[in-house]
Image (cartoon, rainbow, N blue to C red; front, top):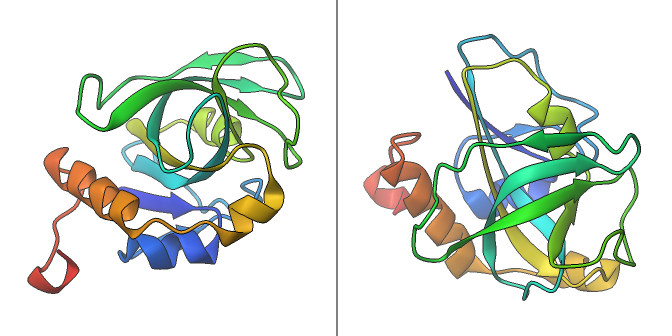
Length: 163
């Protein structure tokens, strides 16, 4: 089964598809079966990456442990999707934790450790490490593009009303 996981209600509403809310920090992840496909979409902060950019993390670093987890790229070379390094922190990051472009979230490292059939992750950069900008950010075109990408990957089907 394909599981669409989002951290915040407003991400799920913007996605406009059935979703499961996992909470900021992935504190409420449902039970995942080995044959489930996890699809994590949502906002992230960016350093050196412009707000509105859709990124697919190629790896995630757990900011607490330093663990590096390589991630498969499912959208490599797809127009409008940039590969990026993601750093997962337990708190909102306001200053870069490394040199060079990266995105920051609060869930991906936890999700990357869950045994499952596949993990797909697409993030929309909402801010340049500014929590106020993150809260105010909205980009319907980016969410529409994410829906298109999920359809093209065969992960979801859209009804005429959802297109």
